[in-house]
Length: 153
Image (tube, rainbow, N blue to C red; front, side):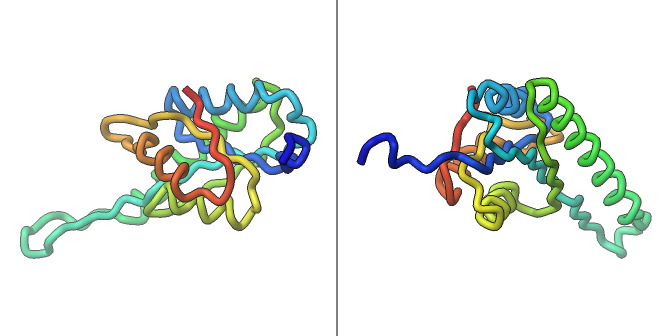
């Protein structure tokens, strides 16, 4: 099998969570030379807050909807930032916002549905409170993605 047998890369997904490493993923996408023939999508997966509280403890009821809305607004802002960064490196990308409990599963499903040829992801994601664990995400994608995965370092 020669190099010419390799399928041309058409659809590229860039996993973005706002972390330094996911910004590197966008920059890496921008450095791909034949990008004129590629369709890029910046994908941001966010998880809804799951709240556990006991009525017996006398805890005040949490306004769940307000929390969900705030989370979604944050996610939209992050995705917009990702798209802006992509434009900055010469990529006209579509944006995809997905609310899901598992980042890996959501990206794998989306990549399968979209028949993606390549997923570009950072090494590690957010730390601390905003943990999206791109470390586990990048290794999860390597193991489960339906296509090639390029990891930005």
